Length: 355
Image (cartoon, rainbow, N blue to C red; front, side):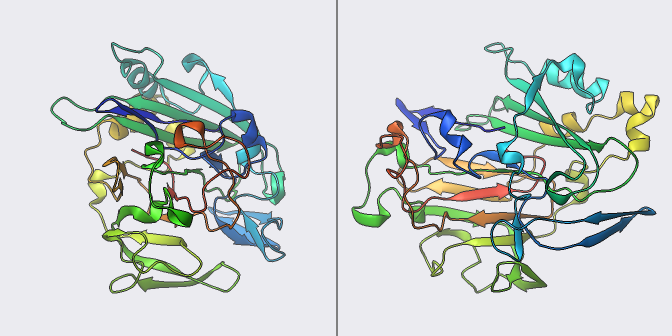
C-alpha cells in the first residue's frame, strides 16, 4: 500500500510534499518510498532466531537482502511490494464495532470518503517469518479541529495484525515516508543542494539513539543524543551533517503513559463481546491532543509536518544513496528515473499513530 501524493494548498500555491515518481506504476521497482514496510521494518541479523513468548516458541529465519548479514525491511519481497485490498467497513475483521462507528462518524461534510481500511494476508514462512498473518490498515484523513489556526489536518495510519493460529511471530510495521517540503517551489540553491532537505529544520524529542555496528545492525547500546549531531532541536539538518547521512533509530524521551493510545490488544480482550463492543482505540487516536514527537519544517515554503506515535522510537533517514532516482513534475522534474533528488529525506515513526 503506497501513498503517492499529499497535496496541500497554502496562500494560492499547490504543494506535493512527498517525493517519488510521477507514475504510480514506477513504485513497482522503486523500493521503500511512501509504502508500508514489513513484516519487520528496519534491520535484523540474517540467520536462525528462536523467538519465545507467552509459552510459545517459533523459529524465525530472516533472509538477506541488504548484505549477507542483514535483512532489511522484511526481506527480498517485503510488504512494500504487496498488493493490499480495500475492504468495506462492514467486512473489517480487526476493528471493533465501536471503532467502526467512530470511523464512519469521522466523515466530513466535504467528503464521505476520507477513510479506508486495506487488508493483506502474509503466508506462513513469508520471507522466513513463521505463521500466517492477516493484516488490516486504517488510513484516515481528518480535518483540523476548530480554532486550530494554520493547521490543515491530519493523516492517521493504524496497523492491526493477527495470526491465523495460536502462536507468536515477530512483526514491526511502519510507513516509510519520503518528504521534501520545499520541492514544489522549484527553486533553491544551485548544485547538489538544490531543493535539498538539508535546508529543512528538524526537531526530534529523543533522549538516546541506537549505536550501530559497521554493518548498520544495532549493537544493543543506546547513547545520549545531548551535545551530538543527533540532538535535533529545531536545527537545520545540514548542521553537523554526518559524512554518510542519517540512518538512525532514536529513542523518544519519556511521555505520560495516559496520553498514549494502547499499541497492543490481547486476543482475549478483542474476542470478548463485551470488551470488544467497548474497546475503541481508534477514538483515542482520533481525539489525541499529544504534542508532536517530531517536527519537520521547510525553510523556504514555511510548511511544517508534525509526527506522533504510540511507539517508543523512530527512524530518521536522509536518502543517502548517490543515484538521483525520481523527481515529480510538480517538483520541477520529468517524473522519470534518474531525474531526481541528490538528497531526500525520510522520517518514519514506528507504528501506529501518525499525524
